[in-house]
Amino acid sequence: MDDSANALRPPLPTVERATYATRNEQYWRRNLIVCVFGSFTTLVSLSMLLPFLPLYVQQLGVTSTSAVVQWSGVAFGVTFLGTALTAPLWGQLADRFGRKPMLIRAAVGMAVVMSTIGLAHNVYELVALRFAAGLVGGYASASIVMIGTQAPPERSGWALGVLSTGVLAGNLVGPLIGGLLPNLIGIRGAFFAAGGMIAVAAVLTVTLVREDFSKPPKREAGTTRADAPAQRQNHATLAALLVTAMMVLLANMSIEPIITVYIGQLGVVHDRLATVAGIVMACSAFGSMLMAARLGALADRIGGWNVIIGCLVATGIVMIPQAFVTEWWQLAVLRGLMGMTLAGLLPSIAKLVRQSVQESSSGKMLGYLQSAQYAGQVIGPLLGGAIGVHFGMRWVFFVTGGVLIGCAILDRWARERQVAGDLV
Image (cartoon, rainbow, N blue to C red; front, side, top):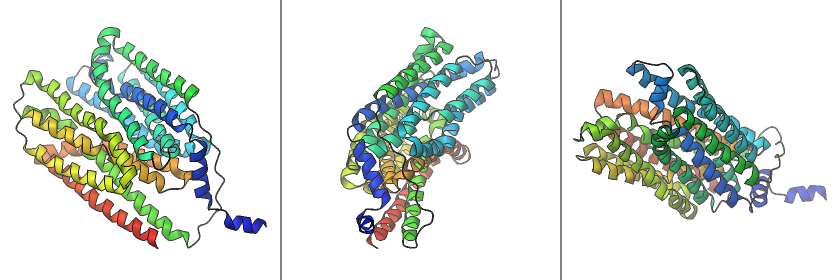
């Protein structure tokens, strides 16, 4: 009797996936609201220092202009390096101990570290604390793991799109707040305020987020020959998705180091240069905010692969005319359109990554996805700056547009390979 019951029982991964989603069906909407707020506040806190970071570096004893620029860049970028290094680890721990503990860890850790940055005595402590913020933080990454695994498959694209909107809004609003807050409470006070905001998110996470989690049973060691082709198929699919995620952030960030110089070549007077550059950069984030949830919902309806390939081609095409603009407002419009086409990519990629792995390893794989994104965020400005210096700034748009078209071809191959594998 036991043998016949075991024979009729579905494979363990299917049971675990259905069980976790079903058990948390009543929680995921409320959890999504808290995760959006928490992701928004943490991204505001991380990006708000952009306008006053060089001033804080000067306060900490750096006097040379070139050294101020250098240390400001290191202090800002090292946070993303820290997050890229630890995201897979936190994702793996989420698979073992639950998603909520990782949210609490990120919120509490960020609240403490951001407040401590306001107590830094020198630039070395500033860089070390910013690195620590990346290592212990990652609230948005933990949110993606929770919502990506809790939301029903038919709503996961929309849910991840809404979550992405919160992240984008934080990146957009942060520098605006950072431009005002130090004048009211001082630079060190701004860091304490940032820590306080994240502390509120931590309290809401502890009190409102709900999760019914049980540690998945250990799988038996070894893989049957019948399972091996499916695993190889999954590896190819996941590799294509991770490469695409990295290239999306690379393309988006490639122009950031030189955009002010590029706008200056369009005839904008020096006194208005910083303001116009800020508007142009904000247009991309604003466009993504408008479309992220809509394109995520579209992925639920027509499939993630179709949205990814379509958005990659559209973004690659929109990149090209940016090299030929003659007025700054034309660049702003095109960057806004680019933000709209980019918006559907990361939620759709996360949806497909989640569907391509077993429940027991979904957190770890979504962590690798976050690492790939942060790698693109680090490499993009370096590559864009190098291309701009050696070949001219217009070539940044040509190269990144070509990279995105290449990713579309790669993803079409991966989709066809996956479909062929499903038919076997």
